[in-house]
Length: 380
Image (tube, rainbow, N blue to C red):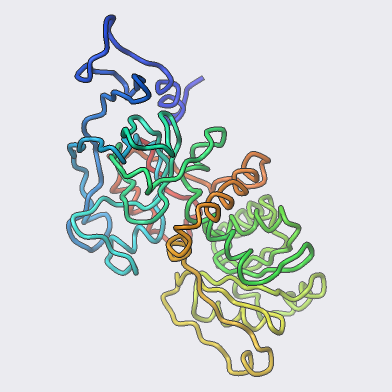
C-alpha cells in the first residue's frame, strides 16, 4: 500500500536515527527525528523552506520559496516541524494587502496548520516532545517546513485525529462553533440559514449543527456541478440545500412550512445574498456576518429593523481568540469539544487537495478560482 506524504512522515517521526555511542548536541539525526536527554531534546532540523512575500499583490506573483536558517531554540520556545497547512481566503487577503491584520514584511504566508514539537526550551512546561500543536493566533506564518516559536503562541492537539482535520481546525470549525454558540440560544429542532454553505466554515456549520439536532438551510451559488455539491452537503448533514436564485421562488416558501423560520443567519457573502437571508429570518433573530466574498456591502431593509427587530452582528475568530487569550479554558474547551466530534465521525475536514510546498504557484492559483469546493493544503 502506498502511503501519503503525511503518513510517511509520521511513521518516520517515531524512530530515532543516530550512530552508536554517546549523544552530542552536534550529532546529526536523520529525517527530523528527535532524541530526549534530561527531558530536553537534540534536533537535526537546522533550516526551513518557507513561502515568503516581500510586498503585497497577486498571491502567485508575490510569494517565493526560500530557505531560512532557524534561530536557536530559546528557553521559552519550541522547534516545530510543520506537518500540514491550508490556504484560507484570509491568507490570500493578507498577500493582497486587504486583510484587517497585516504582518510586517517580509513575512511567511499562512495562518493555520499543524506541526509536531521536535525540540523544547528548558523553561517550557506546557508542551513536550512529539506534541501536535496549532497556532493560538494569526500571523506566525505556517507555510514553512519548520519554525522556532514561543510555546505560549501554540496550543496542543490530540494526535488521534486525522492530520488534515488538525491542520484545518483552528479557523473554520472554531468560527462555526462560536457563531452557533454565542449569538442565539439554539436548541434541537431550531433552524439556521447560511450562504457560502460549501465554504470551509459552511461545511463545519452543517456538521456541528447536525450533531446538535439543529436544522440548516444551506444556500449555494448555481454552478455546473450543483447537484453533486448538493449531494455532498446533504451527506455532511445539511437539512436543505438551495441555490441563491431560488430564494424568492415558491419552493422556498414551501420549504419553510417544513421547518421553523431561521433564528440565526450566517453571512459569508454580503450583497443581495445577505439581504435575502434577512428576509427569511424570524422576528428578533440574528444575522452574523463573518465574510464578504461578493465584496459588496450588506444592505439592511428598514422593514427588517422596524417590523422584525433583527439583530445585525459581526464575528472574527481572530478577535475572539485575542479577547479570550487570558482564559485558557475558553479555547481549550472549544477545541476539546470539536475533537470529540471529529473522533465520533461527526466533523470531518473539508475536501482537501494535498500539494507540495514547491508547487505553491499552482496551489495559490487554484485557491483563487471561483466555484472550487476543495481546500489547497500544503503537506510538508
